[in-house]
Length: 74
Image (tube, rainbow, N blue to C red; front, top):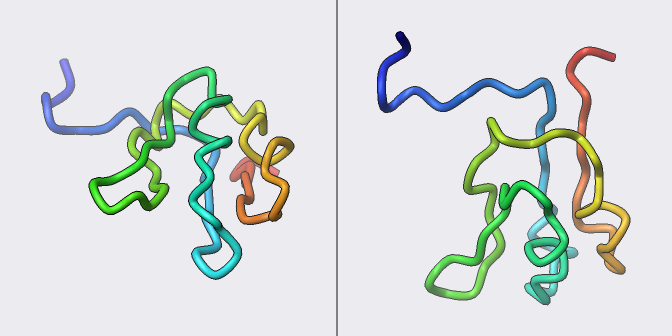
């Protein structure tokens, strides 16, 4: 059994370019695993990195090219 506070590992890493991101939230809306979220100030952040399945829905929906999904196995 793994510790309660240990986040599941994912082979995918999401980078959000804060300079390009307009905080529109489209990436949050289209993520099927709810990996992304909006904080109290309206900023997008990676909430559950271990849940990312690498579908890149966030990447393809972002009109500002502010997201990057990296496959660590490549």
